[in-house]
Image (cartoon, rainbow, N blue to C red; front, top):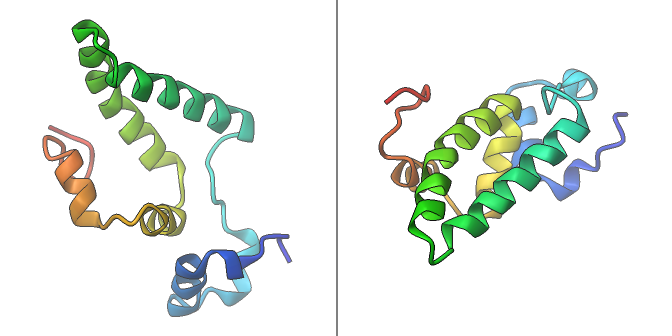
Length: 110
């Protein structure tokens, strides 16, 4: 067993069962890269989210531009099952996400 309690992640567990990947669940690569790299990415994203709430117009603009980069980077580093679980945990749908990034298509191009 991989040590992950999938009962905490019902969407992931359901997707694994629907895709008949029960035997492979221990070998799924959930995150491309290291945990340290993911932590740095999340910290940078957090700071830029705070910049987006600033009264400073240049900071807000920088935050908006960087959001595109982090959306693409995070989207490519996280397994699709985990991304679906995260959307569910946030109470969002794919449609909500496409509204947030309406200027980008599914593959990250403009």
